[in-house]
Length: 239
Ligand code: IPE
Ligand code: IPE
Ligand code: MG
Image (cartoon, helix red, strand yellow):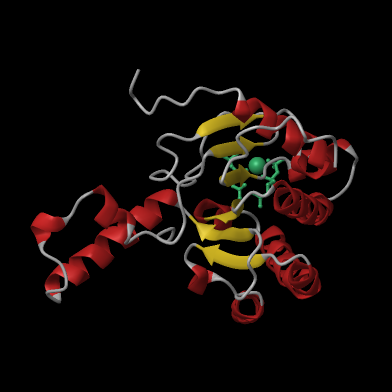
């Protein structure tokens, strides 16, 4: 870990669009899946870094609703990798006191993946350090649609009065209801778009975009992003 004594305002919640695994591999003449394998190592490194910095929540965009459109071979490899990652890294999360959570349409994932995910979530549920939230089969628009359906259900069952619906109530019907909004969003590999990530929650989040590909992103880059965040003046629309 690089020096961090000068860091002020460590964000409570960091969200990351982990991008560029494929390009990282291509540059080296390797298959895209090798990029994903290296990317999983970065997840380990960055979770550990966030935990050390005292970040409370880290949300990682691991697989989007749109990523199902990729060739079946790549999707299968990613699902296998996810399962392997969870199986291998859960003991490490235990040691580091990291609590695992997941958001997205998790029932879309292969059965064995879901089972492993639930085992990992369950076994880390009592941990009190960093909360690591994996966004899996996640789409921001899908989440809003699911939230609307859940709201309508509550109204129909008589648990909620239509007149009571406001921003806070709506937020309680999203996948992220247990977490504060992200303070800092990082996207690797230089792309300047949200790609359907946390559309509701990123309203007032600070952005940090780096040209580095995700497999090359290190703790020093994390610290650089947090340092840049510390210099931002967040106004939330006020003066
Ligand atoms: C991010 O890397 C990982 C996932 C989206 C699963 P990409 O696979 O998007 O890599 P690039 O953007 O093609 O380089
Ligand atoms: C966003 O990356 C999704 C994840 C990081 C999981 P993509 O590579 O899928 O996004 P686009 O296609 O470049 O917008
Ligand atoms: Mg990409």
